[in-house]
Length: 334
Ligand code: PLP
Ligand code: COI
Image 1 (cartoon, protein in one colour):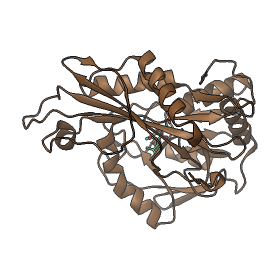
Image 2 (cartoon, helix red, strand yellow):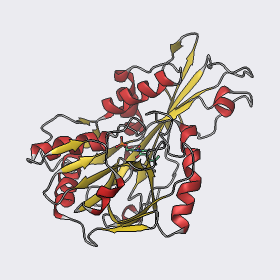
Image 3 (spheres, protein in one colour):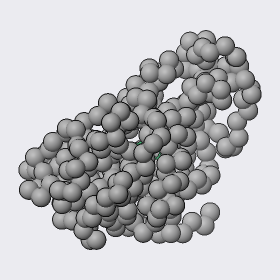
């Protein structure tokens, strides 16, 4: 094993093991640590045709005190179950999920980046229907596989502003345009607008509401947050965005430090008024947005990281690395 910890990006990397559970005869079996990334499924498996496939994303961090902290795994377990419910898939017990993540991390402990490198372990659970069938119906058997890999910044360069672009004209292109599920197939429709944004030198696609294209929904991989000129934390209320655990945590932190938090529809005309804008999510953490290209308009924010985003970033990463008191008991120590 020869990992350059401070050069890590956000890419697939095989580690020692993944943990697998099989659902059959109406119940989940015991977890098996598996040293292979291969899986054999029938070509008629439901997930390949009808998209019964959901996933999650969470992180674990090695602290200054040497302890490994998992950030809010109960929230990911609950969201996995709400996605499962929406796609007629079986729920997975929350405690069993947390235990599985712990077992996986313990077995892959040498892949948890050292403290001070800025890295973390990204944990990716994926659940999919495996029953071979050709009629449209829900699968009877499922696999839940949880993988873990060391990760650095999602966008190259780390914590500095990047550009975003709203690409419209794709009906239900946003990952969550069909509801608030974290569903593997959903993201495929976001690839083309994301490609167009990237071709226009904007790494981050911004999705507007699918009905009117007049309200901000979310970014391709993350929620939208903005700080108003009078220091309020504003984030969209919308039924077609993923309920981000990072955003939920940041709203709490913002309240804790005395900021007013507003969760409400955000009209695109307001983009001209904000002092700071950012994307937030497990993979992107807080990524400040430098400019937003929206139709024939360009909205510009600071080229430097704003003071409010810096404070929010320092606090959430401080809690994750065990440097700031975890007053809400968000982290689970290995
Ligand atoms: N929105 C989308 C479309 C995402 O893919 C993600 C990442 O999972 C988020 C928002 C942020 O959610 P979280 O903070 O729970 O990672
Ligand atoms: C995450 O932040 O966990 C995500 O799932 C974002 C993206 C890689 C899909």
